[in-house]
Every structure is written in structure tokens, then in C-alpha cells.
Image 1 (tube, rainbow, N blue to C red):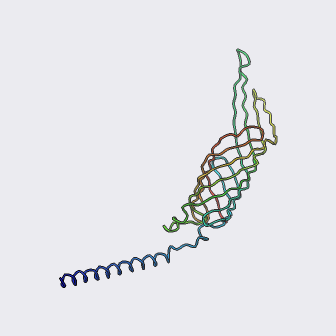
Image 2 (spheres, helix red, strand yellow; image 1 turned 135 degrees about the vertical axis):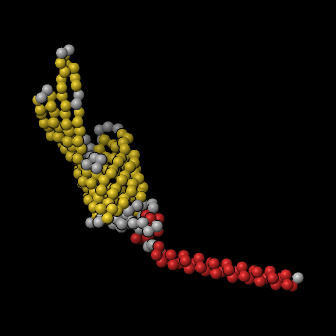
Length: 222
């Protein structure tokens, strides 16, 4: 009975000793790892100043991001959008002929937007030793665009007769976007940018219209 008790006691001490060594080893590894992976929250996002170019609807904007939280930035964009359009109607005017007409549009619109972006995976990227340079991470956010006003240049060609007209559109509109996006640093402070999401456009002369926001482009941070 005594030998059995001593044997159990010895096994218990040995097991406790092994667990203690294992726990200490694991703790030491975690501490050593944390020396390389510990992150000060203020380092998650940085303020950035960039020039952005969009490839879908040609735009050139200046972007400024200012941290307002460990993973959240206040985002401001200001610049210019260039849009092209082509309309080619054919209208019957008599049984023997048609009115051949086409029109081309060039729109120049100043762009101003403010928004908030939350980089939800920036900490994980840093812990996996992935680059977060220039806030390279995925994010959710919202953005308000407006006022949407601009200059329209219209060139019409009606039966080989050309006419041109330039006018300033005063039909003010604003847009609200809910977006998912991503930034990726390509090196030398060049970045790839992608944003997608539903949006609502409100024209002061009409009702609210649903739309879709898509931005694919590049930026240069300085």
C-alpha cells in the first residue's frame, strides 16, 4: 500500500514537473514571439497623402487619410472626373430616308468626397509578416460624394452637319456609398486600389436612384 502510494506520488510529481517545463517552454516561446509580433495599436494605420487614378471612369484625385482610431481612418478625396458618352439614334422621317444623327459627350466634373474606412484585417496582416505599408489591408466603409455638378461638351453630327455646345450642369446631386475595398502596396509607394459597393444617388430635381460604385486604379503615396 505504501509502495503503491509512493509510486503514485512519484508519478504525480514527475507529471507535474513535465507540465511545468512544457508550460514554461511554451510561455518562453510566446514571449519571444511577441517581441517580434507585438504591435502598438497606433501603428496599425498611418496618415497618408496620395494621388489616385481610376481606370473605370477616368478620375484623378488627391486623397488624404487621417487616423481616427487604431484601425480606422477619415478619408478625403478631391479631384476631377472625366466621362465620355456616345449616342447614335436613327429616326424615320419619310419612307425613303432616315435622319442619321449621333452625339458625343464629354463631361468634366469636380469630385469631392468624405468618408470613413475601417481596416478590419490590418492587424492580422502585420502578425503574419505581411506588408501594411500605406495602409495595405482590406476595409469596410462609407463615403459621401457631392455636389455632383460639372461641364458638358456635346458634339452633334446630323446628316454630316456638325454642331457643338458647352454648358454647365447645375442639377446638383449627392451620392452615398457603402463599400468594401482593399489597398496593396506594390513597392516604391505605388499602390493598387479596389472599391466596390452599392450606392444611392439623390438628385435635387428627382427621386433617389440606386446605383453601384466601382473603383479600380492605382495611387502614388508621398
